[in-house]
Length: 128
Image (cartoon, rainbow, N blue to C red):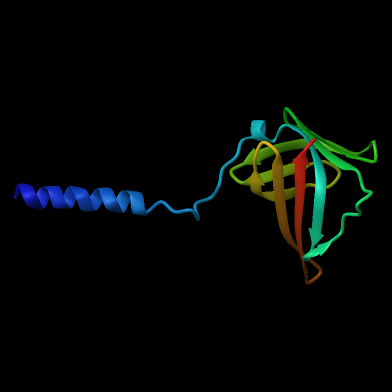
């Protein structure tokens, strides 16, 4: 009986840890995002749209964002992070998926449909 109890306990332990996977939703917090991020790539439907001369910086600070293009403010608004989503509310409300966020790199993606066409975007930044 004791042997069956130990086997059952071992099986429950293995099941509990095997149910976790790398496919689980990532979760980030807004403090990880704070700072200035220089755009290094902007793919639209897998085509590079960022000109090498473009100077675009996204700044995140305490729930507020500012997008600066060539030294001039282009847009401002509020942001929040929920799980792996970056929700930006400004001139245009938009929700990105945070694909990667480290101390030096940020990758955002978006997939939306407009008028029967699907738009897929991927933006990569480096910490400024």
